[in-house]
Image 1 (cartoon, one colour):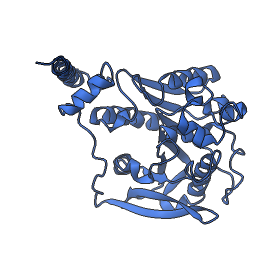
Image 2 (cartoon, helix red, strand yellow):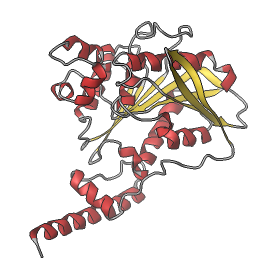
Image 3 (cartoon, one colour):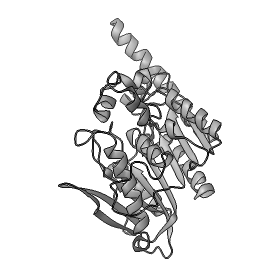
Image 4 (tube, helix red, strand yellow):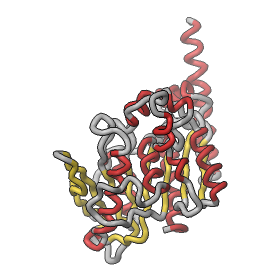
Length: 322
């Protein structure tokens, strides 16, 4: 047996052992975070031997869910920015709306990326929405922030049409979507909304940030090509821009309650970003809840176990604050 084969067998053995321990742990205490992995190598080994169950990314739409697709909420030159709305067909009173903002390093992604969440929460009685925004290759910052702010204003202005309670709005985003969710929630209502055709009313009641960056001025963030493309200038050229594009710079005591999820082996957005966010929210007196999942990577909620865990605490948070 070669040394490489021996090492692979050892990795697979420990990944299997860890996955088995995870099953026992979760069966005994379902409210605790699923047991993670020592590093991404062990996680990949567990995935290779099919010890990680993933959610269905393109689930079938139940017959009792009504969808309004490709609604234009904003026109920018020749580009039509759109959103989709999901709700129960028999919804008989206005419900809170959960607005999902997709990730993709501000450069890619689709509003349909959050279909599993959109359907799950529509089935729970919420109205759910997912929005498109200008990507970084189309227009740099602050275009995407301006777009998501306009989407919230549009949804509030058309609340009656879609059985939405306009005073109960939550924004949820992962990665770059989490960053945009925080930017629209923490910045002043007058900031970044000057090109919206609908009137004021962009304030939201809850933020859920899934592994999104809160501070683009860190040395690590400065070196990321995705951040450079999003902002359009290097840190050396315009250091103030990196702070202006950081949600943490806008935190104040009147910001909405925030729920945070982040994995400790995230190699895309360091967990230190959420550590700082949690600290800043505490210092400002903003209600917040931080779930730091040991041994889980970026986009960890594609795992069924992590997704169930996130939804459990999202359910409780929405019940408390929406």
